[in-house]
Image (cartoon, rainbow, N blue to C red):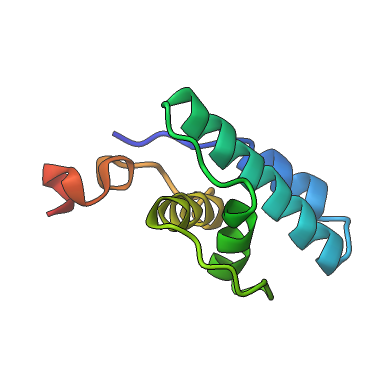
Length: 106
């Protein structure tokens, strides 16, 4: 199974950011990914620390951030959001969808 993952707005975000300077682009990218992570998690019944999520995303992107220690939940969602952002042009397969819990990923 292979589908594009434009549903999270990644391609639109990259398009909007293409004309911005680096700092503005980074700030917008982190802001959009953070909001998406928090709202998606809320739908699933998981309440994330709204200050730790952007910090974790910045850290995952290799950007400067504060020294705040994020809980594993915030770190995990940050890893997932950055992975989806960085691989937005690649097909979305079963292993990516399921992570290590999927038979295809083993």
